[in-house]
Image (cartoon, rainbow, N blue to C red; front, side):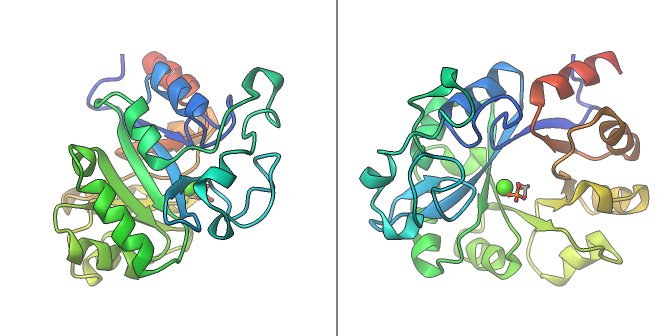
Length: 245
Ligand code: G3P
Ligand code: CA
């Protein structure tokens, strides 16, 4: 079993190594495989709906095409988002964010990565959604855009925010302190975090969720330095590996 001393298993785009990324099938599989959190990406459609997709266009992960921001949710959902991955997944749709929250049990936390620099319209739509029911408490919002996160946190102090970065910072936890707001988690590229930075973050009360580590030798290094969670395309394999560690 994955004890409390073990890192959280965080399914990247669901279980993107084994199901079409960012679809309900992928999130369902991640939950079945024991992920304690799933990561996903959001954009805003032309009619202001929160759409779960990594890219800002439909081209790579569906049989549709074009920019998400130029199409309504109804138009986006005509596209097949599963067949490209394998015939067993044909018929999967690009999900609305609300569908993922409805699908997952309350025990699975949700890491919403904001990809789209759509500004205030996306801020308002996302906060409005997160303030409904238990949504806020199930969520960590992350972004490479740290100004956006500071803005969201100022608007909603209960929101947990996570800093995504691929830069080799000198002092990871002190960088978070410079933002002068409460940071829940650091989400560095997995190769960039060392033991000292992981310990400093822990001492500052900040979780460390590196992305996206898919190989046992990467998991071993991250677990050994004491990260709080590991973002992976293979939550089932990571859970099995942790159980045998
Ligand atoms: O949130 C971690 C990771 O998803 C960030 O990079 O490009 O996979 O969204 P990307
Ligand atoms: Ca992402």
